[in-house]
Amino acid sequence: LGGMGKTEIALKFAENVSSQYEHVFWVDATNEDTITASLKAISSIPDAKKAEVDGTPEAVLYWITFL
Image (cartoon, rainbow, N blue to C red; front, side, top):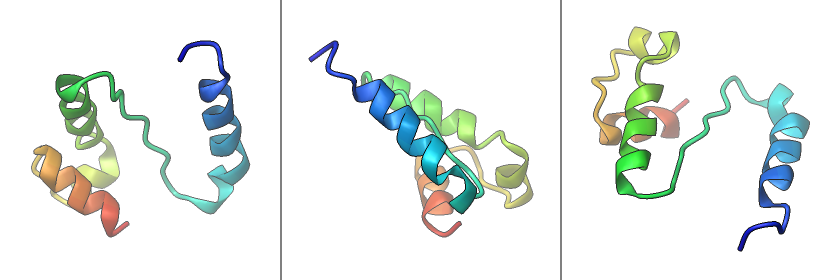
């Protein structure tokens, strides 16, 4: 459903709560491949590397859950 303002709502929410969170992650949920690629990309941020997240989508989701 294009044109309904979903992106604008998400951006406004992120802007409003960004000071409450250390990280805001954007995951392209177009399909399973883009979700996997987005999660793998999150594993390359410095805090994930410091936590030794191994780059699998499951490891990234586990790490995000316990931030």
